[in-house]
Length: 86
Image (cartoon, rainbow, N blue to C red; front, side, top):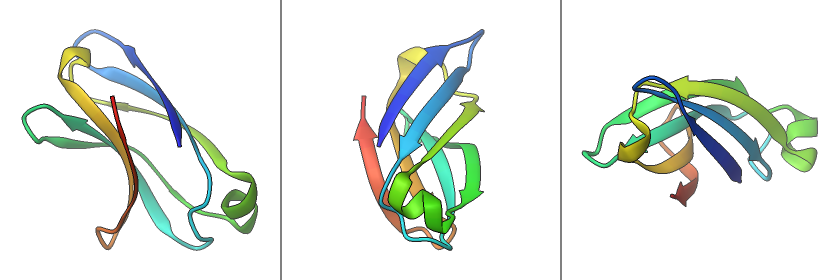
């Protein structure tokens, strides 16, 4: 996964490219704050093309830029596929 996190007025915009998550997984792009808070920035169901070619998505989260410590991809069952520390 690659991710770009851009500050806004007290929150962040996120752009991520995710590759290698199995098709059919119901996923969430999660922004993790320094206090342990976890905000869902986006969600999607991985397509067969997304499994092999990747998925690019945009989202936003109510976490201040100076509090963001990671961006994660997790399915709705709680399995973490990738965690990118920032």
